[in-house]
Length: 497
Ligand code: ADP
Image 1 (cartoon, rainbow, N blue to C red):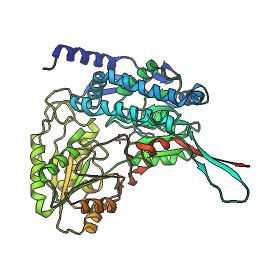
Image 2 (image 1 turned 90 degrees about the vertical axis):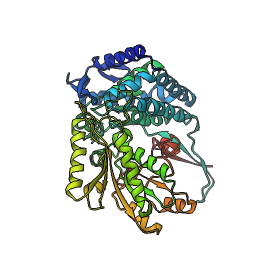
Image 3 (image 1 turned 180 degrees about the horizontal axis):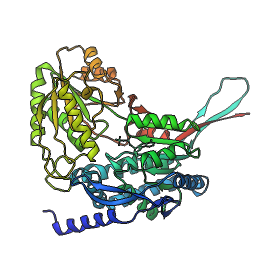
Image 4 (image 1 turned 60 degrees about the vertical axis):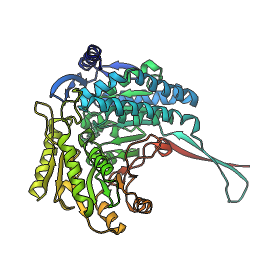
């Protein structure tokens, strides 16, 4: 039995935090933004205003970059790897100790079902911190045998890349903030985090914990603000050594252009149009549930959402019927309602965008083969939708919708090259999901698919498994050894003996 009084108290606490006056967290202190202005933040579940966040701009970014640089050259540089590890672990413990508050803030601000925030977002952030806490003590170079004339002692070392700007989106605000912060700090970098303007709350709460667990001032800085102001200022600032970005491919392009000012290192985790391939021998019930979850979780607002279903013609009808049935039964509603299985999308703009894609699909000749109901009320609800009769020329198939809209297509061929060619017929290459019981087909398809992650018979993220995109889905990888090494520069040292 949930303790309703306790839950109400926790919710009141989260609302109170949301409603506070928030500053920018720079050099270990909370400061007013230079502009003195702020922007509103909303609860997507009912469209109500829940608070304001400071609108950081160029001058604030400059202060934050200076603070991050001073910390990089100061106490952070001399701190032992094991001490950095302990701080990261302590931060994980602190988030865990406030898990419910983080989950409530995430649901209030992003709209996702509270149970998802509790079961995925917050525990995942904790795991990512603990995983990365293992790296500071293991980031080593190697000794190298040289073949040139003379006798040499040559070796490499890994140094922190420097001051990092992390620009993150609104679909998993805490998890994204931590996905950048944890490896950057593990590698010995300092960081300026800019959360999405739609969802500043969990990043603000995170900044409070940073100070409490004892990170030296300036190591972690938080600048809330609009993308074209605070985000663009970070990208343009010559004192930033690396930008790590998750978001749309469109903004990714702007970041690449801006970063050339001082040849910043850039890691980009961009859009996706993940294919879900169901072979005739797949376990159909599991494939149905897996396909449905991969597009309807977080209301489809996941870069790796399985948005293109390719099912063999012998199982196509069963798949479509099954996913349509799943959509029809999904309880769509505000994230704070304990019965909700799918929440709203993040904003009125996002709702309009998703609905306009569905309309475009119908205009192009697609048909709705299944649709759940969008909850009534003022929240930004869209119905989970299964489209059939789609083809690769349609915008619903080509473009990332970032909503609960599945395009289902069939194939008759059993030739794996032809199946892979269909899956690869996209500008994106973030992920792919294959459902089959045929081991050989699974391995062969995994090799033929042009995507950063191929999952067979299941899904899920793990902080140890590199994640990132081929093609226009991005540059570089997050997670795993690659993820943390991306925050280092390799230096080669050769000594003539
Ligand atoms: P979406 O389109 O899904 O809202 P975006 O890619 O626009 O995602 O946003 C992701 C992040 O990029 C957000 O933190 C946003 O503020 C930031 N952003 C948007 N425009 C720019 C820009 N021109 N320069 C830097 N960051 C930006």
